[in-house]
Image (cartoon, rainbow, N blue to C red; front, top):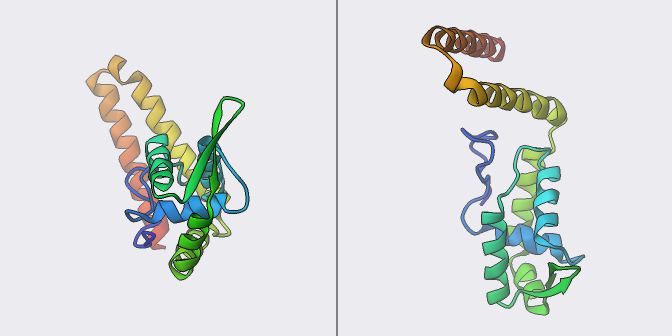
Length: 165
């Protein structure tokens, strides 16, 4: 089931789902409306307030698995594959409703926090720091790298102090 032991992972693109959970989430997303893969990715990113954006490498194989299981069918519209839940998929979801509802509840509990926008902005700022250093690290001498590492270390210590306060 949904990983609840930590809200933020070492890398914020890591899936918060246990193996096999994503198929329930996807089926639930398409049970009311046919959707294409990219739309599923966008919805999950929006619902997680930007904390989780599933990769195409997670979504499309799961969609293929669901199709092979007979739980969804694929049509083509405007050059895109559109996925629709089948009656077998509805039965599958209904038979496991308690489990699927637990995953949805944990998604809401984890991602429905009142301070989600502040946390999203904080995480975005951390990402910006990583991108700035990553883009320019080849041009940095040892002195500048040491100064950057020290600045990040001071920031980490300040953050730890704030969290312990």
